[in-house]
Structure formats: C-alpha cells, structure tokens
Length: 437
Image 1: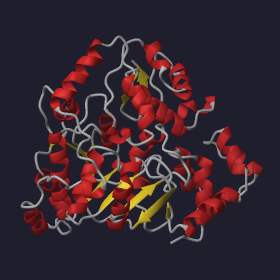
Image 2: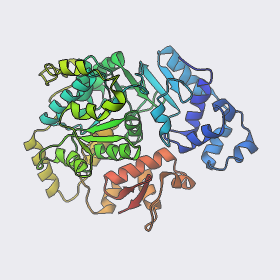
Image 3: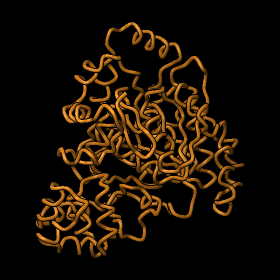
Image 4: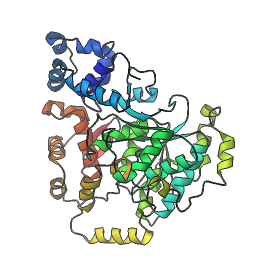
C-alpha cells in the first residue's frame, strides 16, 4: 500500500504545495524524493528554477508532519498513491502541475487502460439536467466507462448515483482532506462511491473544504479522463472554467444542449457553438472512443441498460442525495430577473464563500456575470485574490508562476486567477496565461 519512499513523497508534496509546477521539474531533475531530501544548502541554492519559499521549505528536514500524515493514513486505512507508484494514473503525469500524492479510500480503477469520462455541471440542476445526468452516467457505467466527478450537489451527485445504480465504477475527487465529508449530506453517497470505486484527494488529512481548493482540484477531474461532459451551467459557472481546463489539457469536450431561453443552458450551448461535441445520448460519447477502447467497452451492457436507465423517483435518495435541489425553469427565470434588477451582483459570490467550501467550483457553481464596477467586485473577494489582481500588469498577459516573486504560491495564484475570471475581471488565454479585461 505504501512504497518505500512514501514518507519522502509526502514531505516533498508538503514542501512544494498543491499544483506546483516546481514539483514536476524537481522530479524531472532528481531520481526520487529522497534524493531531494538529502540536498543541503549550496545544492538547494544551485537549483535555478525554484523561488526562495521553496528553497526554505526544502531546507527544513523535519519529517514530523509527514510522519503524522502517514500514521493517520495507516490507522484509518487510507491508501497513498505517490507519483512514483505504478498505480499512479499516467494521464496525471502529463499535467504541468501533477499532484505529488493521492490520498485514496476505495480502489482506484485502471485509469490507464479504460475509458474515463468526467461529468460536471451546476449544482442548481434542473429536472431536465437531472434526468440527463442520471441516464447518460447510468448507460456509460453499464458500458464499463468510469465516471469521474467531485461529489458536489447537483450534477456531480446525480451522475455518481447513475453510475452506482448501474453497478459501475465512479470516482470522486475532493477539494478537502480525505477525512472530511463535504457536503455533509453526501456521507452515504461517499461511502457508496468508495465501495464501488474510489474517493481521492491531493489535500492532506484535516484540510478544510475552502473555496480556493476547488478550482485547483478541477484539473485532476479533467486530467484523469479522456473526455469531459458538461451537463448544465451558465456562462460564468465553474463548469465553464473546468471545460476550459479540459481543453487546455487536450481532453475531448462534450456538452448537453438545452433550451436557449434558460440560463442553465447558456454554458453548454456556448461550448457547442465553439466546437464541443454534442452529447444527446451516451452513444455520442462511447462511439467517439470506439477505435481506442473497443475491447474494454461493454456494448452488451450498454444495450441492456436502455430499459433501466431512465431517472426514477427515489433513484438518488437511496444514496442520501435529494432530488429537490434543482430549480424549475420559472424559478431560474425569476432569479435571473432579480439579478438583472439588482444594483450590485454579489449574492453568488457570498454563496460561493459559504457553500463552495465545497465543490461548487468544479462545475458546481452557478455564478452570474458580475457588475462592471471592478472596485465593488474586488471588495467581495479575498485578500490574496485582490492582491493578485493588483499585481497584474495592464499591458500583457501573465502566467500563475510569475507571482512567486511577490510571495504568492502557484496554487494560490491559480485559485485567485480562476476567481477573477469567474468574476469577469480577467480572461484566460492559450498557454495558461491571464490578462486583465
């Protein structure tokens, strides 16, 4: 369960922090984490691509924190899959900022040799979205496709329920420690996912579900998969951010079309207009990968599932998921009208801060376009995000790692830039760079 260098992998992960590009560079230069741990002052100073913060961290040789994490995992039967483990998903190694370790409850599916599809969307799922997320996920799972999501309210939870009902594998990627259930209402769902697949996170135990964790976590959801399906979400929703990350990673993008007069359909419809694959049914996704995964796709299982895959009352409640979480079209229209008449649009931002400690980010938030008043919008953001915005030049695009010299870590910068993009203050460009609007 734990490789011989597990302790040093944890130490290195804690030293670098989550989503660190420096981690991949260090492992590319040195043989293993123990070799990095053995480095002394001048040797560490000679590493030309790391900043002062990481140099200081690598100079601290205490393993007490790593021992504490390892001890917790052993006592609570939490598996640790390190970057050097043969079970580590190869697709994650393709990321520019791969996780150093994955804490896991359950059993990881064979990501390297089977089709995996990420399913994301708004937490304010409609009846239409609920039926589609359940049916498509049920049929994909019946065909031996692994469903990957984030266990949030709405699309994530419903898609996981569909996969579980089909008897298939599903994986939930958390934005908090493995010892924390978020949202708490999904305690039963989490247990079921771990029983059929796996619950994983790169965050060490005891990490709270802070909102800033979820944009960072989303790269793992898309990174584990060959394709990502967007069910519902408006133009500024977290699902759209996840979709952009998926495309940047070279993943295929699928979207469920919806009515043109409903805000939940804005995101998927826009993605389709921009070239995303239309997903009207599960076959639209499966046939896309027939050439590569014909031998692992269960076409008989898919055919048998057609008579059982329709959403039914009680289908998600058995996993502790409420089917009453969605808003009707009339409610969505009323909410949109309220927002349009409000002088300042801050409600969704507050909602994100209070509830997205959970996943409202991985495609679970339904944030609206913010006011053009940048000062007002900035005032609603946290201190680090405001600082990142103020550090951005007016005349050129910047990458997240450029903020290191100002003492902002890569994970903090990515989170802040994502928040600024959702808030409408910056735009993302090809190559992972951002520019002020």
